[in-house]
Image (tube, rainbow, N blue to C red; front, side, top):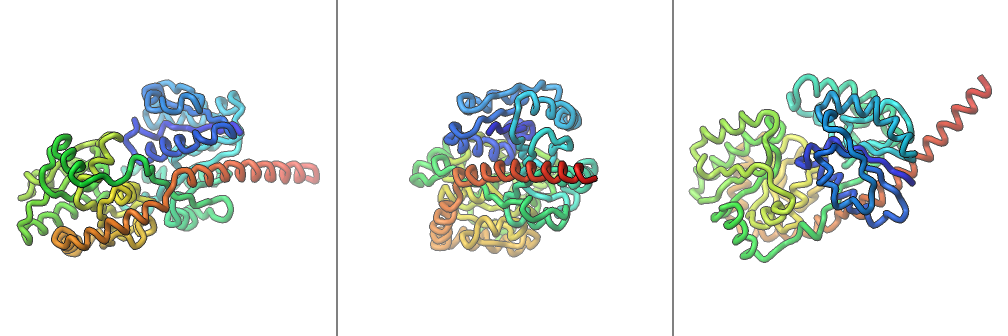
Length: 394
């Protein structure tokens, strides 16, 4: 089977969708003898796919198509011709933002979340309109949709009115070779040397996005924790600036704890596992997630996790994390205090997190995704047969 992937939504490798694309491609590499992959990649992103050079054909896409409107134009007007040129059996678009209207071959799309329906003001009005109105119509043109959680699948059914065999829930995996525990002494030493972190710290890995990632309430809860305990713990925020980042930066600069709130910016793929290992507690107060990779990666590295009870976070973490109402600042502060003070709680969370993370496997994700490709082609063939039969009797 010749499988095409559109990869323009990875945004330079700095997004969760990028991690999904990279991890899935690595997992599929072991199935290269069964499938041929054709990846359409923006020119400046080509080095990011060097690892796939031997198992996939990389087709460069001109940089002039990187801006969103030009990228949408490329998907709708140019990509269909490339699909035919490369004689693809199926095309996978790993984000609802670039789903195709033309149907040059069976179409598969991955929907990570429908946060535009769940978090008011998450995007500007244009992106909100696209997510709520345009994407709904495009989704109905797809032969198969992959939802990365049962939460997302329920949202697809509720807001887009799509369900049944066209929607398949496939959880992400976690790379156990990269995300694994290390001796605490080594992790702390690297944390000091690489990041200058020489005290216990809470870690939050998420792009600096307001209001969706809920940084402001976390900052307030951290301030209350410090005032109540006087413990020298730091709050470390890892992630690049996004919509509303200026609001977060202003809150930090006004905070009485500003000297102890560290902003690391985007953390590279190489450094991220060690940062998780060096952290004493991982905190994820996001208002909504379609899956939630950072809490899972933190658990796989042996880091205790506190996370919001919204979206798919509870589905992913199960009983291995402390769940909190992300809008309850007092409750969040209380859990920060509890986990910082009670070492046995951290130990129990660490053990439960490692057991939970072991369930998620990218090889399983790839195998299930391959089944969706095959089902999409079968569904298209059935639809074509029905159409021909209808035409014969019309």
